[in-house]
Length: 434
Image (cartoon, rainbow, N blue to C red; front, top):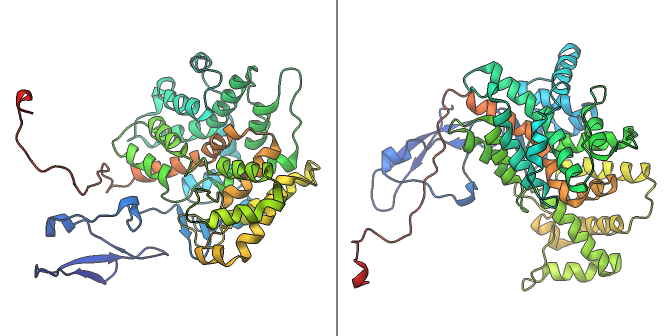
């Protein structure tokens, strides 16, 4: 709280009202309008929540103008270089990076919860083999509440914590199971001696007749992708988790709601859309045809959209994109992919976006989805799996936000208001007179 206030005046002569201004650690101050309705009988109107702070949080901070992303105050660039994913999970959940003893204990706890109840295999069989992995994951995550009812008391800190560990540990296993099921291959059980990312890749790509050979470069790339996607402030899926959980529902149901929201092509499906765009450009002639593609993007009468560029929050270069660009080249180099036509298209598009006045004026800089799709394709993941990989990474952010909200003494059930534009009150008319 600050000593500053904001005064709202009215042109019709109604009395002005004053509201306190609250300052955060960094970023824009906010006007506390919680008493607006009581004082004026009015609500604010903000579709898409463009200027509304829905909560107070200590987890993640984004400065879109500077292109800055902080997890608990640490720049994403430093965490992606110096930490592994489980270190970042610990940071997001508990507020500080772990020391050596805490790291070992936390890694062991997560590793010991990577297996899922055997009965979930039978639940998996109820889906069609060609079902979208996000449809499967939504159902499977929600079903965890039926298998682990011993950790759903929101008022017990121990139960909240074990639910968090279970979700982080089991999501990669569920995702790998959904992939194996779609391929008609047997499930691969987790191995406790492997790292989080290595375990996931082995469960995805090993078979009973050929084990997966752990490649440190490729495993590190997956681990880095997880770090870069771990949390992103109050985005659509995170807000969905918070709103769902505000009713007091169990954590598995709240995370399932986040998975469902993430499925949208404007959110978690953006990297898949970006890759499909590059496929289309390549099919139409590759680099030689980029000029024509850009012309269609600029044409207001065209329906062509540029995917993987620009961001709702970032008005500068997405800091995650710089890290992802480097990771993409590391993966392609390790796999011996020197001449990738799609990468050539991507690099030319990036060059144009950073130099063309049209893109500079509209601040359409490459975002993380632009590079992550190429990287995941090179690693062998089918495009339908891209969004579920996002869900594996984002689970820890959802859980951290869920825990923070549950532990907030001022937490209330979410209840957005509306501007009603329907019919006014009217009398019922009998059917014979209609």
